[in-house]
Image (cartoon, rainbow, N blue to C red; front, side, top):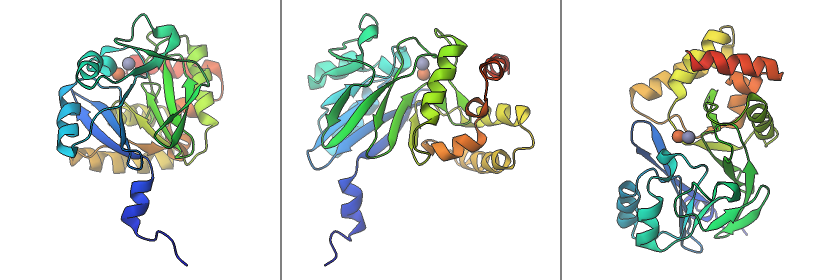
Amino acid sequence: MKLNNNPSIKAQSGLQVFQLPVLQDNYIYILRDESTQKTAVVDPALPEPVNLFLKEKNWKLDFIFTTHHHWDHTGGNIKLKKKWNCPIFGFVEDTHRIPGIDTHLQEGEQFSFGKFPCRILFLPGHTLGHIAYWFFEEKKLFIGDTLFAMGCGRLFEGSPQQMFASLNQIKSSPPETEIFCAHEYTEKNGHFALSVDPQNKNLKNRMTEVKANRKKNKPTVPFFLSEELKTNPFLRATTLEEFTQLRKKRDFF
Ligand code: ZN
Ligand code: FE
């Protein structure tokens, strides 16, 4: 007997992700588990687009997941919490600077969103308290500003050592991992990547595709780790020295 061969049912049984482009180049993600009717938001820069989306779907908000304290990731926290009375998750050591935080997460901690288990990765570098939400059964990684398509986050607080270690941690995830980052920086990152790795055929091909998509105003996020391993110069750097030089160069690109 064949079970569940209706593709729309199959799609509904997985973790659903919706992408809301806001501000200049930010992405807010809405997560939905249909089986338990739970809804979460990752890094709400603003409250209004989230509320509009929820209204359209006729869903309520159950959780707010924060990757790091920057305003373009937490700007909607307080208003959303007031409206929905939902808990805000964030890194325990950033309690003093994540607005409204009430669930204090530790490195490696595991919890469930609906029926999907999630593990917290600690990825310092962009900030000292940056975390990612790793839905390991779904192979979906919500990574904030640590890794971007063909790029990585600026080192606002952390050291090159810390960021290099964080990127190496990401590298050890399964290559089929789907990465949801918080900014559409892909095209500019790609230009930089090509400037330091001009002979990379995979990179050239990817950039052709990226340019075409951006012309049509299509998002280039999410993307697969397997693609990054072939084209992202920051993931391809094999030594700390190499990584440090690249990051410095990128700051002035
Ligand atoms: Zn940031
Ligand atoms: Fe950001």
